Image (cartoon, rainbow, N blue to C red):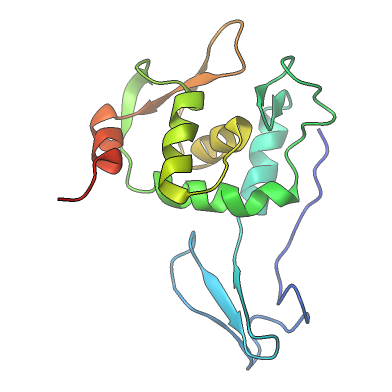
Length: 165
């Protein structure tokens, strides 16, 4: 699986470096860092493309839709265009507890739907899997399926999905 490595050194529009006078980080959080470029008047998020690349290299059969052979692996590669949603999924997973054993109540496909509801954007199954692995969760492949189980605590999932009182 080949991915294009993305290094964000400055504004996507003008190339002004982030450490310059006009482009400044808006937060100290390493996952949800956003930058503002005064020259272009745009906001940009720092992505975790290197983390996405690392996971894709570790699991060469992982595609945007889960584990190959359920889609054409060449047309469904994880790419730099997945980096932003990958970063947002990592932010959603932050604070979740890891269990000793996989949580078999919900698959990666079900979890990706929870994240979609929370973020309001489409999340590919493979991007969710890559983000969860990057965040330190262990996976268990489901035989004959592109989906996996993760060791994410059910109580944390319930807390994340309940509406605020």
